[in-house]
Image (cartoon, rainbow, N blue to C red):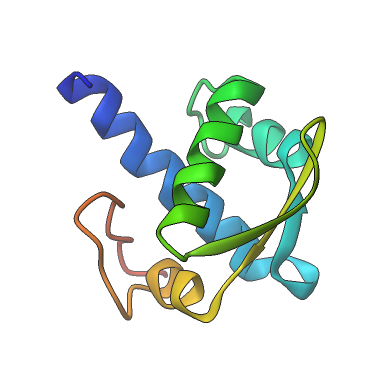
Length: 101
């Protein structure tokens, strides 16, 4: 993975976890998460496949759980994922959040 791709992955992972942290039941699906990442507020150009790949990575590392079918994947943040989103814990492959104002 190039430095640019790794940089974007770290930011995508944080943005996903931060969105899940403020979502009802800490849950969302690939389609909504892709729209959020592509929004003017986040601005990380992302395909559904890239979102699904980042969710698979987050699930493998224990930051989210996945349910649903391959064509409709639903992610739920774990307690550890929420700690990352809030900046209470860190991981070298996830961008550390800045202070919230």
